[in-house]
Length: 164
Image (cartoon, rainbow, N blue to C red; front, side):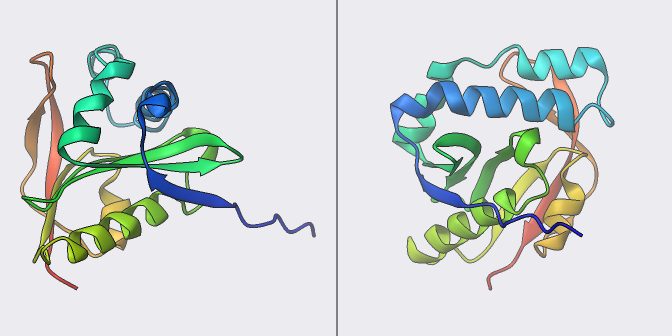
């Protein structure tokens, strides 16, 4: 039996030069990981609206982190510290289910607890990511719709987690 070595992941704040890597991870995560729960037209509406420069406002306004594996963006996460909203956690399919998303979440959680002690976290989960967030202690609310930046709506699940 051959054991694989643990993935070496570095989590850090995103910088503008990361935008292309973030975009690639984001689009591939949507197209590959979410294709079981969303239609082709929903996936296209979700992914096709994204641009590299679209991540710059998140770097300025919120906390945007990247996870790197071997010097390449393996995933990213965004937190709005003022509201306690996890805006996004996406992992490139090549690194999915290897702990990258969990590391990104724990880094966001530490930042949330350190920036004025956010009492609770909340998010709108894709249908695909609900089990991931449940493993992190989030509780699902009633199914809802999330409006993408282009006006298209896709199903989502609001989720909540109290302070740790």
